[in-house]
Image (tube, rainbow over all chains, first blue to last red; front, side):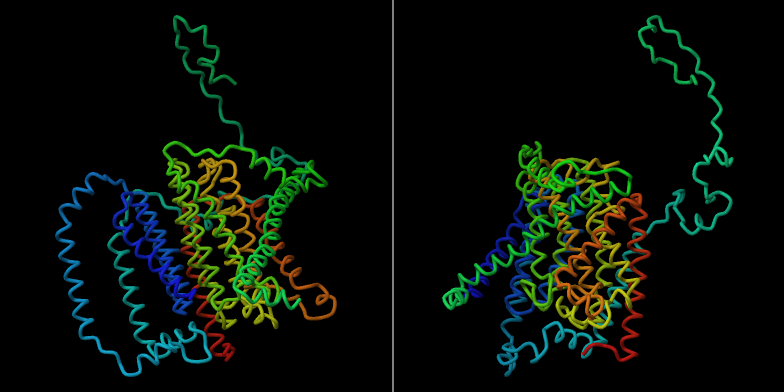
Length: 235
Length: 339
């Protein structure tokens, strides 16, 4: 009974959060609602006995993706009035796209056929004697390892594409090349100074800079009130 | 006695038992946190030839409680223009996350409150959520210093999580389980700090970055950002940040202990070592790691921001990836993979 109650609680909060993501006025609040939504989805996974997926959802989506999302949204300079305007204009278009997606889903659901042993499989999604992490690993890395590798390769190519498209070599920037700094000679020296001997005696003390020429005195008619005026060059 | 056991079997009794277990773990943790702040000040003072807090109580040992009382007496200030609810929620979130992580830590064999299958993933998830307290605090304060601190922290914590993940995968490969108790039990023959020594070092440095400690304390760099993301906080809301941060440090020390230093296991299963009870070994190892945290803080200057990013992405990430491949290959070729 508690599991059933928890399911309805998580599901209700999830739907409420999803609604708030769309309707919230402040985009940062939207992202925060999205994160709350992710949490409730993780809760639903836990109820279904998929603890590995629940944790991965929190780590990947909440811990990394949403952080970067929040990072970007916080730095955006958003004109709210303009956003409302856009909402009016694009609402019909969005409704059409949503409607088509919904129709397609309906068509798929209409022709859906359950296999004969679906009910049995659903009762024991995990083969006996192993935790669901092990079961998932067997499917992913043993049975479908090539598909998994191909998915990884596609992601790698996409990542390289993103970097190539956005990397810009700016001339004139002075980069730090640590190898060059470590390899240079004659500029940095490590000396062991005996205690009690000042650096002055070892002859590595940098001499005092030459006294700067005193700046010309600018005469003011009422200059005597400022004692600290124009005395910077005195030693 | 029988009546008590009957009561504990009911749902209400179960709830009472869980709350009691949580208190039995969290109260020692909070006391440890109080004394960590004292120990840090004393150790750093000794390293810098000062005395440190030594007036309140014997050796200044009542100093943390005096500080806590002082915090309680101060006024909670919410700046004008701050997002009020988020501003107050951020320290609570930080503190809450630092506390809930402790539910899976096994201080002794079978002592974890929640001995779950994916304990290490749970810890990784909770520690990766820690960044939200910082970001929300920085944004809700409506202050430039706080916001800059939050942005730095977001980038930093996400970067170091990647290499931490690879280090954890290395340990998991050797242990063959995601359960923290099983990971410690797998170290009965040898602690993982010996075969995986470079990974242990990387993990330690990454935990420094993950907890925003010196030399990676850029989110709160005093010299340029005053106090970073919590510059606008005062009184209890500040105290919650402070407690949460130190509880997180202790948590990371415990995690390192579990992953690399054999948790509650004695160094060798022979006479004088086995007299010491397991939780004491655990506390000793975590304390040693905390001493290293303080030692590092007293020794190294703060990293520059681009150096920090370079270290995370260009040094630790490739290195841990290569070491992961080496570990996997060795385990496979030698036939040491756990079943």
